[in-house]
Length: 272
Image 1: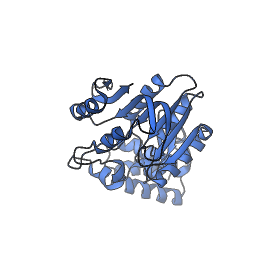
Image 2 (image 1 turned 30 degrees about the horizontal axis):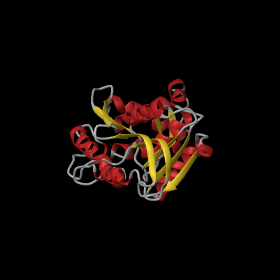
Image 3 (image 1 turned 135 degrees about the vertical axis):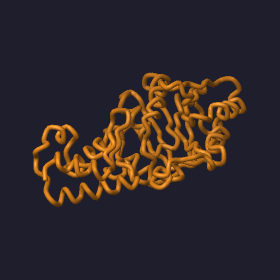
Image 4 (image 1 turned 60 degrees about the horizontal axis):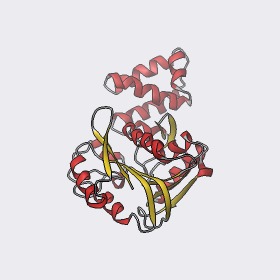
């Protein structure tokens, strides 16, 4: 059995779809502790029976809906490798827009606060891109903070990132140039892909009937012990009107909605 044979076997298990080959390449690369480039260029390289069995186990788990990121413990975000496990949501490509926006507003030698940090993807990406910046990242779940710490150390930014266990802003205080957040925003009655429901943590997905309960709670806490110049947050593709009404209630007209490259309303920005 060589690498090419193993990939073909895996593709057949996953149903022969175009994305199946990519999945198999990633899983075999993980099994062999190599990168995808190695898989491309070493098709004739032998794969041991033990390696092949482990590869097929991973392929079978993926065929049953378990995300590759959880199987390998790795997800790339903003061009940066992140460790992930089932205690945190898998970072989505669309959230990279939130990082872009945060970087626009954080001044030189500035600071920021990341609320509901999860894997730390947003905070670490900001710090990895801007060496002059310091940050604080908070999450209510200690297990998530362990993952965020792992990623801050692995990406060499832990000396500029403070991690704090807090229910939103409850145990925080300070003045920040930017607060950025990607809180759970799925409504309890909203359709969610079955694989996502089955494998990703519910507490990182849902936020009340309409999906905006945590944002409402966050807005209520602002200005007491935590102040900011700019607040940036992500919301669902169909929540533009609802988040707009909520923003108006707390911030008058000092906010705007920004669309992603597909023209979908994705990010709100509040300036004070």
